[in-house]
Image (cartoon, rainbow, N blue to C red; front, top):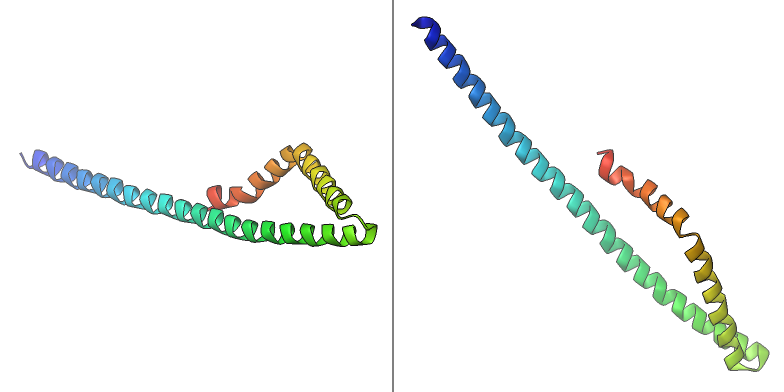
Length: 116
């Protein structure tokens, strides 16, 4: 009978150790998910804030440059058209380089998600 009691004790210890391991693993992965979520939300928030401010700055610079070109050319409409066409050209270049941009973004963001 002593053999069965020792076996029962050992199995209870292993059972408790297994339960503890599962609980600790669950807590660890909850913390990891929280970390990745907070990092992601922080990154998106920073991108939106900085991007919004830079977009507003670009708008005002484009407007000021259009007014300047209009004064230089003595035709305000022509100044705005030149700036608009320049921005359209830059947009087309960015559109055609979108795969390069996507690859760069993936390479830059992957350490945040996979190397921690």
